[in-house]
Length: 626
Image 1: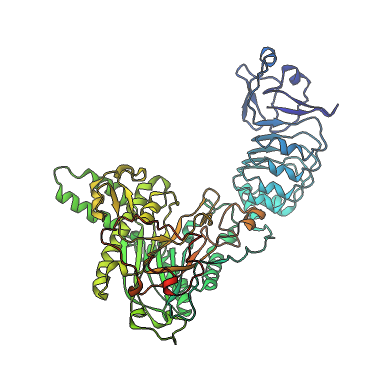
Image 2: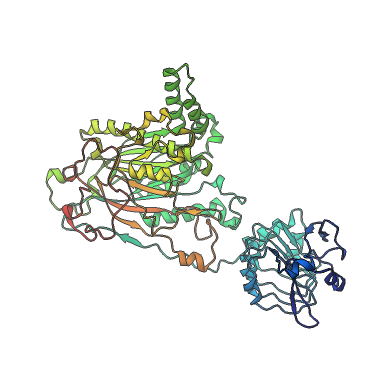
């Protein structure tokens, strides 16, 4: 649609789709990107613009107009030496993608222009603009912005937020020497946008502290072993590129800035156990390990599998997973690395050996889809120490003490690509299978049943709550025909990882419960293109009672400050940390489950808000047998 404001009588003429030929004859042509070089169009309905582009249109015939026909329009032209634009106009045309207001006599642009959120092209050239509204920086869909031949000396720093902008026209303005110099350098447009973004004043206060949500209250008069666990993807430096996070100022994306903010967050939460993903090998050695060691933590770390194929210099920049624990509360019994690449190779080799004639087509899926993704999971078998009891002076019977008992902590980083939901699910199935192998060894050493051992699975699973990964982990089983399995549907190779008496599902025996309440936590990962929950802390509720969790990030702060994605000067990663507190349930108080409950038929998705366990006290009232 072409919309024209006629300055002679103040009337705005709207033509359903196109201008009439008479309109073209009356129209005075100004030099601007939105106007045709000539008043005529070709037989194909194309108009040649001054920037070399063409606009295709068709003029409705008189017969079509008489029939009441209309066209769908997304462009608007406003011409006629206009001096002022009503702010209300921008509220009525929020669907348009291109707006041409060049060749007028505008001295200011209303801030309400930011309501045109779908605009990709804006031509304000050949006016008399002396300033621009800061709200222009909120129009993040803009790809082309023409401000040529105005009276602009300075630009609002907010323009730096227009990270999609690939054309910025500023010629013919009396720009300040600093802006003018940058603009005329090689690749000056992008350099200028980066300059503006880097100098953007952070007028926002830091986000409010996240609330702690209590679920159960432990009786202070009872000796109960409690601890907290934090899970955090810290965004490895090599992934924090200006291309991926162009909306973030470069100084706030720089690792030297972010690392201090990340360490500040970790120190602030003071968790007893800290699990991290995307930890660069060199930064583990230089930053995380020494800094946290000084705070009383011990640790284990492993890089992704690709590090094995690299020289010492290249290995420094491979990211991996790390687990830290307070050495006064836990000691390391052993660590256990799960390399999904190695697991895929092992099971594929076994399959080919067993079925040589078929050449194991299912093994080919495993080798081609799963094996190339070198994600890992890292486990630490910890031995509980006295200091997990805050009230150690209270007496307890030997059967109630958990000192010396094992706690298995696992952190995992599952494959990221949404197109590989089958790989994510297969890696998760592998994870539970490998954990089961570990638990069998731990149970023999500690002379206890495997399902009595408390287990935590923390990590960036790159999977939403409606995914097959979440369903499998939380329910304990998944259909062999689940859509997320893709080529692996009914694939016999996955039977090697399944523990289930039901031949229609793949199952595990961990009976896991997620600490993240997806109904109240809208995201753990927040970027321009994706916002959702993909980080989790799973626990075994028969041996770990969840006492509380860290609440959601403050959404009003995000909305009020128009934050379009993390990282941000106040948020150092694209993920936010998640945290929970648990009480360790002594094996003598655990409810025994039948051996055939490998496929869980009980809802383990979390606590019911109406549960009597809220505000309860003591072992029995904490419902430790759940």
